[in-house]
Picture 1 (cartoon, helix red, strand yellow):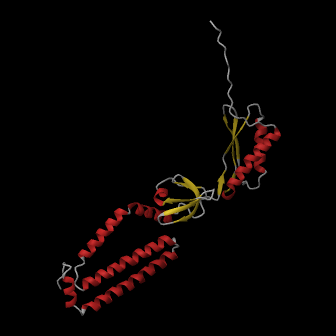
Picture 2 (cartoon, rainbow, N blue to C red):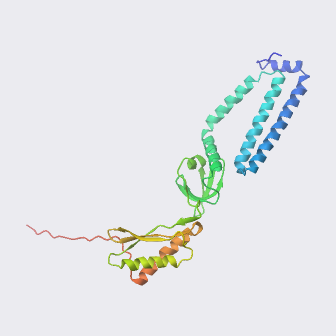
Length: 273
């Protein structure tokens, strides 16, 4: 039968095809049932693959809505309605909404990438988008991070995924990097041995990889050592703070100085003419 494009003809067409209306309704509800069935299959597949819940729910909703809309279009076409206008309006509305929420869509796309590629997980300490903290949740549009002083930072996903991400929790071990200076008049070998003793005295410092203590620089006011022990990532800050304190106490007890920047100022008196 001939499709009509004028909205005013829809009522006349519906009255002339009363027999087809129940069939069209059956087509719509059958299509919606199949949409729910297919969406359930997609959900089971995503659950089996351990897809994150926010992404899983969003994809299932997209599948269900798209197939349900397809069922509606099929039912209207069976009844003889011209669905071109409906599809065009839907496409135009989708485009307008997309342009209006382009930043939101950008955050959504970045959220999908974060969930799929997993550069970090909940509980990791990261630095990204100019902030640092422990990740509390990874949402579709933003991430929640908690700072050391118990503040919550909400960062849009596009800012995180489009920037450099430093994940301090990605590896099970971390290296502590310290620079320790001693005076030029101090015993260099004794200073090195004391640094090694401080490292050996802390059981939290790992034996493998082996800690490094070496002279790295003859600076303006000091001879600088690099001290680089390895620890479990969870012990990083506790060991770092404790090691700095122990080095200072040990050097004080053994008469090793830790110099600070100094300048010699020479005054010359110019005789009067």
